[in-house]
Length: 71
Image (cartoon, rainbow, N blue to C red; front, top):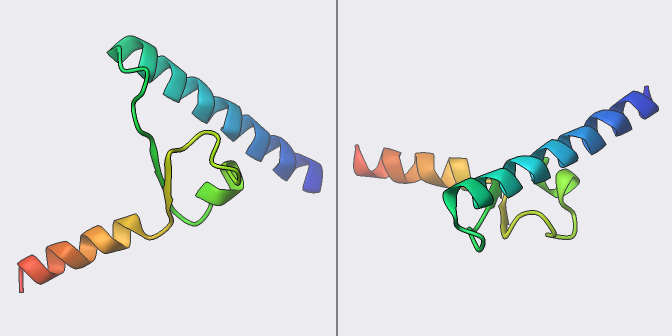
């Protein structure tokens, strides 16, 4: 099972890099900032080579703001 998991992670990393590259090219924004959320973002990019910002709890921060605004 370890080999399958490794293959899935490596494949996902390749897909992520390709999508970011295509977006930068097609939108004409070569210096576009990329934000990764979720606890597995560090697994995909442990050295911050793909993402500019890693925030594992960004979604929860946003939900907190929405909750506070709608009290």
